Amino acid sequence: MLVDSLLELAVIENQDIELIRYYNSLLSDHQSDIVYNKHDNLPATKFYDDFDENSAFQVTPLDEFPQLQIIKIESDSSGIYIHPRVGAINSKFGWRDGRMHKGIDINLNRGDAVLSAFDGMVRIASAKGAFGNVVIIRHYNGLETVYAHLSKIKVKTGQVVLAGQLVGLGGSTGRSSGPHLHFEVRFKGQALDPSSIISFTENKLHHDSIIIKKSRYGICAYPSNAPLHTIERGDTWFEIAKRYGLTMKELCILNNTQKRYYLKIGQKLRVH
Image 1 (cartoon, rainbow, N blue to C red):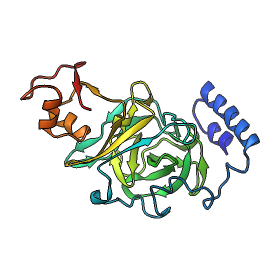
Image 2 (image 1 turned 135 degrees about the horizontal axis):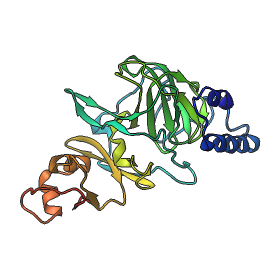
Image 3 (image 1 turned 135 degrees about the vertical axis):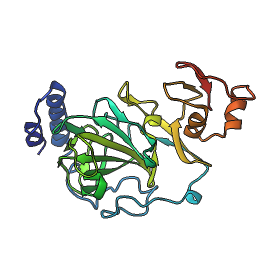
Image 4 (image 1 turned 90 degrees about the horizontal axis):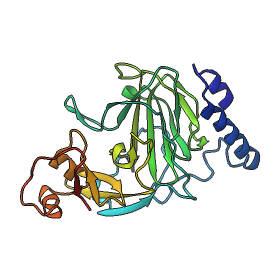
């Protein structure tokens, strides 16, 4: 199936060939582990009570979240991270056109490979309304990732997948103005800002563990080793405070100031 999927791509790159070799070695050594069997080794059972294969999300109410928790998202037990698709960011997480955009849009061409970010199990692999053809994977680290607007789905519900495995081909199905990958990261149904966890310029995790925090703005997540935030284009005091689950007053106190001042790109603010 992996080889067939690669043959549908417009260009087969060296990294795709290396990935096939990697999977072949795993399949040779662990054939019984990489099979379609949704009843074996369900991921993240300490975070989820069930494995709903019909509803896109069951959002856990805020009052059921602990105030703060640290989750290891890359380790020997939970596996590594592989960037799902390298490309320019068309649209960021946050409010857009009067509605909440709960993911990041990555530019691609129709038929481009879309890869699983972590090891896990496919919970949804079908057409779902505005998502179009979508794959939702539950990972062993407790996160779920979403890959939407696919032209083709290359996995099945209940299938065990590895980080870097092909899950679909890029497209523009559902509510979409052109080919792109709508990519989300969720925890217990709550959408997290992917850019708070993943560097989309370096195509890697910011850190191997994250803090998930409940605040007046909802649920936020950020690297557990992040005492400082580096100012990027478009950052504001309010957005930075919201991103790290702080109030404006708390952010000012952390930075030894009584009021907001003009932020410069590259400047650092203490956030933790």
